[in-house]
Image 1 (cartoon, rainbow, N blue to C red):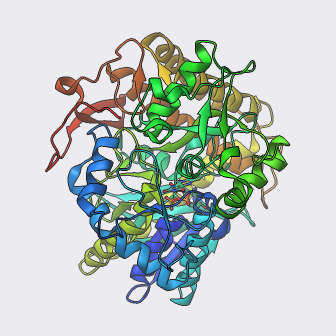
Image 2: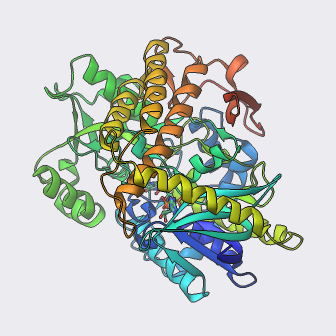
Image 3: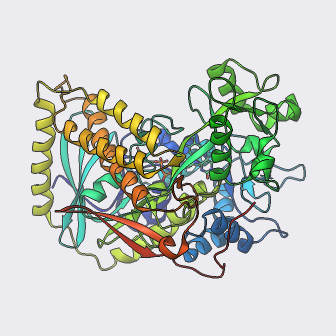
Length: 559
Ligand SMILES: Cc1cc2nc3c(=O)[nH]c(=O)nc-3n(C[C@H](O)[C@H](O)[C@H](O)COP(=O)(O)OP(=O)(O)OC[C@H]3O[C@@H](n4cnc5c(N)ncnc54)[C@H](O)[C@@H]3O)c2cc1C
């Protein structure tokens, strides 16, 4: 065992940093991250963070919108914690220094977002994540949190039914190290890069979730993948929901505001699953533009408002599409955006293994159920970062030291595994396997799914997993070997892709973001349940777990 700490937090996005801040005063906590903390995907968040701040809004109303938005699959005890603690999380970050946009009378400005009954999304122009992450990172530094930057976690060390550390590749040297810890928190973010068309950063490969799966920790609701309605046609860069929140219109090739046929009341501000399906339907039925996109029109907002509220979106359109949204509508298509599923854990982030916690996008507590509302994910990272930090603190009061022999043994086997990949001289290029995975997922596990396509995708991913066993990198350098990192990430994504497709195949209903054209109705009798997928010696095992209901009755969902 090369290093020993009380707590290892894997991931330096908002959720990992918020956990570390909570623990830093009392414990020896280290944050491991494969990139510089400020390059975590949280930095890219645009539109905002939800909180019922106004006297005429309420946490109950926020909770209701979240549960309805989730198509009633969210666990209501978790949603309650999210909504009740939202104002505190936003105000704490504001006091720490986040420069939120303001109303003329100086209060935090809030914009309407999809599926919300009140304009409750607080924002810093269209760079909310950038502001929040810088502020939170500063606070972590101020409290003396240690960082191991450019360290890539490759596995968890399990001692019986508890976790006692991780193994990680130090990218600059290529050495695998064992880091013993009494508690480990997985905060590795989403896994959007399993898809070809995604708004996610290239680093969002789901390493933490894959490592948990391989260690016998179940993953939950993996089939629920969010497709954002408006990504820039051609590059899939996100065009924030804030653009519709500010009043943007969606138009088909006939110039029609087609949302009136899908969500007459909420129109463009219906939840994301509904708007994404509407856009795909317009395109499939021939009412899109020739190459397969629709328009997001901001022109009527006027130049001043676009420059003040959506400056980043304007820049993206100018640089990546050659159009200025002040003068021209933006061509948009739906693209993968968010992972509702993830590591199975409860409201305190506790998993099936003692001492192992999950938080943020990689966790599935489940606060978003079958469909996340925009603005609730940044909120989840801060609210539950604090909650999980407190839970870990309590656990550490009685947790014993890690078993150093178990850590050493794991380091030995991880070194061998990585050496085998590095030294293989002949074999297929990982890039061809990655492309084939993207094709299968984009085509068969997207906005619309059916048994035939999913079965095809499941077989294809199985074949790709076999081919992956024989890849060759063509680069055996130890230092900064990014070919190796990309290959390890690909292995993780293939493992997760299999669980997404399997969960989707078994869920014979349509709920939230999971739409089966062969089972177009929601089926509460069979499927008002969470899917759990566990890796066993016999292969992947699928089981189901009850949803925690509460004050909001399960109803039909209309907007
Ligand atoms: C373009 C975009 C815009 C968004 N806009 C909004 C918005 O306006 N409002 C909203 O609520 N949500 C938004 N979201 C979602 C939200 O930003 C994310 O869900 C959230 O920030 C995730 O935070 P996180 O802490 O869980 O993970 P991340 O911020 O993704 O951080 C993950 C961390 O894990 C580390 N890591 C990963 N694998 C390893 C490994 N193997 N070893 C070591 N470290 C590892 C990474 O280095 C990184 O530090 C947006 C998402 C995207 C992609």
